[in-house]
Each structure stands twice: as structure tokens, then as C-alpha cells.
Length: 255
Ligand SMILES: [Zn+2]
Image (cartoon, rainbow, N blue to C red; front, side, top):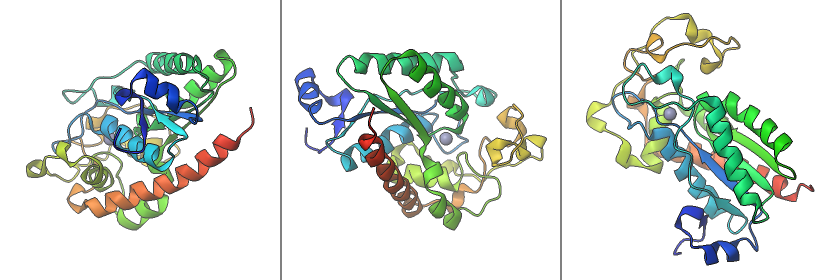
């Protein structure tokens, strides 16, 4: 391995065996496969979760091992646009539980779910509780990593309704994996005034399941024309900094 990082998908078993001498936490990237408007490929969230986890693996080497990503998530609300695939919440919980049980075989006790997709948050919260109850001797945490980059987002994102294929997300892709961005199709969100704009998905306190085409006609929020690689780097750097601080504490946590 050229880079100093532990990515399970690229390692042989003898390499894994050696890595286990120092690895303290397995990071499980969880994304989604869902529509991201006209200018981002459907893999966007899966790609962000994995690419960000790679940066984390470098930063936390040799204490963190990153598993292959879970490339699907809870995306029922995007099925109204072609190409979206959604898991049932129980399926996602089962997949993560199986990953945890498998890696526990080799002595890993601490797990951290690196989520990139807001639609997964409630399920992952439940997943952590279920897995800790049903798999003995493990600790499981999770975060939607962009929630850790509040300062950079506040500084750069001015659209009132953002959070999907917007200036924040396109900026991240320009930094993490520009190959999945289609500049010729770049568009602002075609926003609607459906009551769902008051819900938790838009940082409001109200819960109301809805389909995404009621919120935006083209599948995007915000104004992606304001995106840049520099903004993306700033967001990822801030999230990385805060997450590394947490993981240091998590590693020290006695079990
Ligand atoms: Zn996304």
C-alpha cells in the first residue's frame, strides 16, 4: 500500500492481520444511491461517505480501519426521480449489524458509522441502539459528517433551503470526486412552497414524510452555481478536525 491508510477493500488478509495490531476503530461509511438533480450522479452520497472516510483513515492512521462503503441508504423520498434505490430501514440496520458482528471476530470492539445522507440519520440512531443491545461488547457511534462543519457552511452557504445537490454538496464533490459532477447541466434548485419546507429536513422542528418533487422540481435545493472546490475543502477540513478530536476520545474510552 502506497498511502498510509487502512482501507479494508484494498487489503489482503495478512495485511489486515498486521493492521489489527494497532487498529482501534472500524469506520463504516454509509451513503445512498439517489437522484441528485441534473448535475450530480446518483452515487453522490456513497462517494462522499467513502472519499471522506479515506481522508479520515489517513489522518487517523494506524488506529482506524475503513470498511467497504454501504452504497445504499434510506431514499424513499427520492424514488419520484428515476435511478433512486432505497433500502428498508431494517435492511440497513441488518447490514451494519452483520458488518459489526463479522469484524468483532477479529477483536474490533469500537465502530463508527460515517454517514453522508440525512435520510439515514434516524435509522442509524436506532441501529446504534439495537446493535449495542444485540451484539455483546461493542460500542457503536455515528455522525452525518457535514453536521460537524457548521462554521464553514454558515460562512459559505447563503441559500435558505439547501442540503441536497446544492452549493454545499457540489462543493464537496468538486473537492472529493469531481468526476461525478456534470458542469454542463449545472442548475439552481427549482424550489416549491410545499409545507415540507418547514420540516426537520430543512432544519425545522416539524416531522412530515414527503416526496422530494414536492420540494423541488429538478431534484436540487440551494444554488449549486455558487459551489467551488475551495469551499468543499474547507467543509471537509473542518469536519475532519472535529471528528478526529471525537475519535481520539472514543479510542480512549474504557469498555
Ligand atoms: Zn446527497
